[in-house]
Image 1 (cartoon, helix red, strand yellow):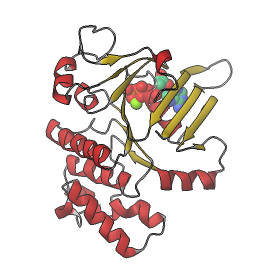
Image 2: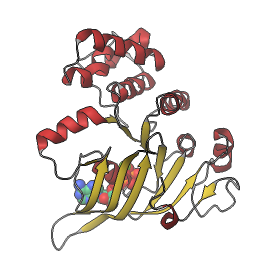
Image 3: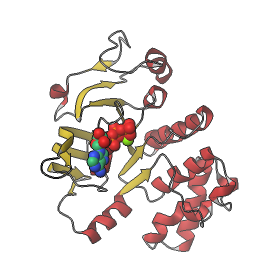
Image 4: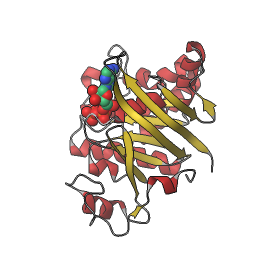
Length: 268
Ligand SMILES: Nc1ncnc2c1ncn2[C@@H]1O[C@H](COP(=O)(O)OP(=O)(O)OP(=O)(O)O)[C@@H](O)[C@H]1O
Ligand SMILES: [Mg+2]
């Protein structure tokens, strides 16, 4: 199976000499095409740092990162922005929509930047808006729509150019439970139908229950991971809801697969 993310020995240190802070230490991560991977862990554990490194927003202090077979660390700024535009999709907690553009214009922005033709832009916007249930608000501005609709607009924008990898940092963090469920179901459908590869940081066990695999980060290292295996999503959620999903809750999900990290290395 094709590998979409390959990170080896990735470290990130902030600050200058005498005042160094290691946010990530020796992270190894492999994500195969079509996986929906969750990243959980306490506040400050390094989740956003990891996502920012994989998404080329920030650079690691050491280590190697390949996304879709391309080493992303030695690119100049021009290649980097083309790479981001063509292969990555982002969904942030606070939506990051442009207020002066309509929903339709926000969605097609990445295609417009890639200079797709107008007809293609229009078709793709409608196709995606339909899938995300926002077709009737395409001509509204962000201030005229709800938080859930904003987030589905942001998610539509993230996938409009069919990226190799969708990166989401707490995409449901600002949503009520109905809007969060709608968004997660859209992401899940995208993952299953289009085999989109998704990496999602979340604090929410319910959101994590949509993932096929969840990594737990603590103090800058991946300390365990669980896979949903054959467990139905609702069962997985029931078993983990309300608890910090992790090795501390040994009873959770007898049918969940939990394998030591070392054992998983090299096996997507
Ligand atoms: N630009 C920076 N300069 C210095 N330290 C930073 C910087 N960015 C993050 N950190 C530190 O690195 C650590 C990891 O931060 P990060 O944002 O990755 O945490 P997180 O797991 O995403 O937390 P949260 O769940 O609260 O979003 C934190 O201790 C944070 O204070
Ligand atoms: Mg964060």
